[in-house]
Image (cartoon, rainbow, N blue to C red; front, top):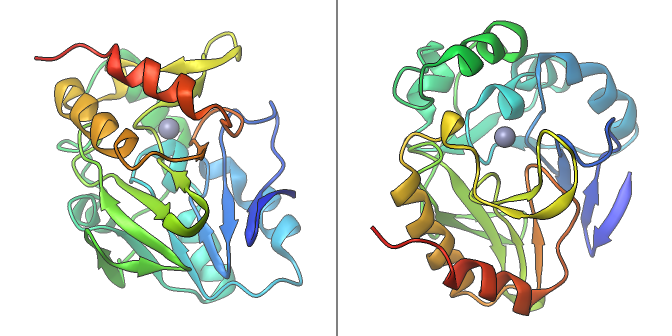
Length: 222
Ligand SMILES: [Zn+2]
């Protein structure tokens, strides 16, 4: 695991930073695809994990959630507006349906799992505050730690091009985003927190606060 900041580790993956899974304090944040079970359990072996939380319930984030919760006996927490999808396996409201997502759905999606805690704005998780950040999915939430300006924002923004894996800020592809305009509003809301360090679902940690502000101020208004 790579230490990102105090109490924050990023699990190793291949390609590096393509699909990120974090350990924040004693909470495992996101679980990659269905294929990620082994890499998660190997890397967190010997550590205390008391809960597993999600940024959002998409197949590249919740794929191994059920398997990991079963293996660790830990409860699953996710944003209140993604919780029904996580529990029922009906993703029709949380992910657009197209050729790409239906392939993803088939190969990456993990089984449904009960949500023990439905996260909402202002909740506290492992020293982070939950910030609602809907758009990419209806129940996407970000994790904000004010004392050191650390923001984990799931897929509100991507820190790499998912096709070429080149580093840089992007909006998440519209193919995977339920409401792109709402997602841009969430990006503006999060940028207004003035984060110093941004951690993504996809891409390496971003340590250029001014670059983030420039990118977000250039986002389309509609
Ligand atoms: Zn993603």
